[in-house]
Image (cartoon, rainbow, N blue to C red):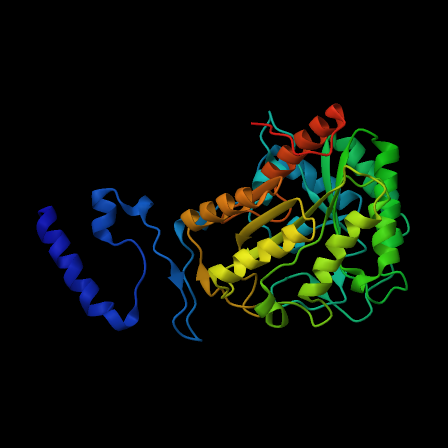
Length: 360
């Protein structure tokens, strides 16, 4: 059959099964024949409350595997450590844990257990009003594991522990100090809870020896109530990030936050969120695609195109962020970003300067 007839028949079938009312989005047979499928970047947005969007090609990743991946998985299991990579079903787990023989594997270790006291509608981490008590050996076990991996940048995060008197801040602080004791050269990023805005908790963590203090604002102001647990809010997150800088005795401390896209936000709202983060002293920002972890969680309203993420990277750079990571698969803890920040911190220390350093 000639290509022309095949295209004609394909078009006819498309008209029969996918009328204009169905709003079918995606590359057709013509695009694959003409080699244009990979160029397709039509925005994918939900048009009804019951519609479930198909995942576009730019969000598909390989199933995690490999020697380094299995080695890290076994090491974490042996020491009874949890990672946000597993609990949050991160799509980059194969890349970060596998790394390849010539790359250092990285992981974001989640401490204070694997059960959170909050129930954000985007997160797949288990929830309970009264999770099990923290493991007193966890700070030492975490530091021991990291010392055996020979990593030079590590991210520590935790579940929210509203059930604890200090909300887990001392446990986090002790973990970071143990890591620095076991491996003085390692750079530590802490992806922190909001501690309900308690300044004493923030003070403890930012003065623990941490190099990067991260706290995620998650989404734009108008969607906070819909997306996050009621105990979290926009102004509180901005306050936590602002106080981190004010309370730290480390003049070189970097602060960082992350925004999920695809939840129904407008471009103006995303830009305003970035403006607000910068106005509160945030140095680094990451933007990534929200992915629905299970059917019980919020649905994706839109799959944002790679070109739009490139746009937000340019906006972040213009605003003066030290580092802006923006892409469909970018997450708050992201291997490429950690590599950049490691070099930035080392360069800043060598120069003994608080000013922005151009690495490239």
